[in-house]
Image (cartoon, rainbow, N blue to C red; front, side, top):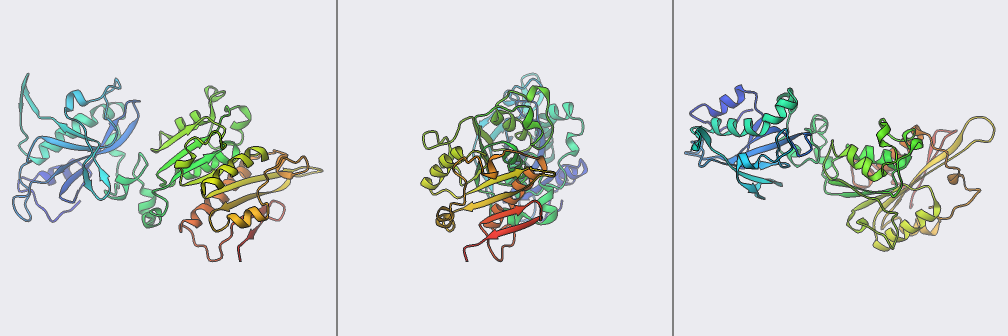
Length: 397
């Protein structure tokens, strides 16, 4: 990592020689550091210190012994906070762009019991803080020092992911990500399609994902949801299970074990966009009433499979409802809000790959709305017939 600034004592070169990942941003030296959170999970944080410039190009000795930290509370192997070692406390200071500190530490070099001294170089200060914060992580995960390569000290610091988003940086997607990065997304229903919507969106840089479902995870769910299943997963509430699964990958995954309606809206009013993934008309009607009353944009999904003689047939649907399409959707009664024994959407045959396809259509439709994908002739209602493998689109034109 290069910089026009120079540390005459060789501090920057010494940090580079130790393969530390750092950058200079808005007059702060910022370095990535692995650490353990309170649950013993490996995380990536950043330590930051304002540079003490002695001239336009030269970096002098550290101005003090204190250090900013961006991340969760770093902990030891016992799950206890390292604050008793690092000193200081919680803090919110803008470091650069939209990146704020979470802690401000006050730690010196120990020379003897009860005796401390100030840092003699920038290298010594950053190396000491790095060793204290990363020590438990490197002990538990010996390769932790090697796991945070290719860090983008802009986008990755604002990212909701616990790992560097090398996918977006390598594909140059950060500009497109901005259109969805401030959104809190609600997912109502975590059955087959809803669980795949969650899986797809968890890999996108939306700010937060809020899950709503009052059902338990049972055996049939394991055959139509992403990933694998452990015996201990059964009988857990779906919300709790999926929050647990996806919170190891990214921040901002929360949930409420409620059946959403006008009487129990939960935090739906706080969501910027909602995916409605339920298979019963009565439940859909209650949520649609709530969302329309709040003026929330949402996508409703549906899957109807039938089998009379021979192979399965049917279709999957994804419908966008927002300020532009709401009146058309309501006028055409596109959304099945009444349970009908003859309605193909009520047969409730579900197959994992079709749940995934239904979810993919919904997420693509969502990303088109926010400018992530090209959309030369916008459609608000997508229907794919299984036998013909052809997507039919309804447009406002």
